[in-house]
Length: 146
Image (cartoon, rainbow, N blue to C red; front, side, top):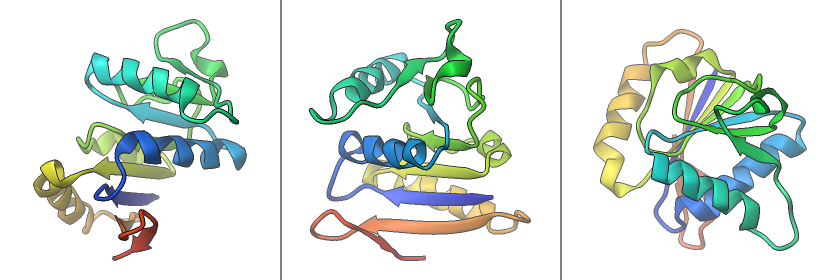
């Protein structure tokens, strides 16, 4: 199981998450995006419809009859109603339930760095968990720092 910690410093979540979701789907995968706050889930829903003029990323909000058909499912809980093996934590709140997936993307900014560091340390002793820490360079590109 791989957990990628993404420290957002140069570009915000709304610029980064759609590209990660796009890569997962382009590689034949499915993704659950988790955000505990309803307003954030609604914002993510709108974002994935309009993040780029030249692309389309099929997705839906969890809780409908079509959950299983969605390549990307936005949910309050880390549950793969769409059969996803990838999870993106969009609200910076680590959930151990993410360890049931094959890969987790944990996004956080400077406001949540203390909590992200605690999650990083807590995962150090978990068997079969590979942790990676990514930070944004000055131009917004990702550099693996750990």
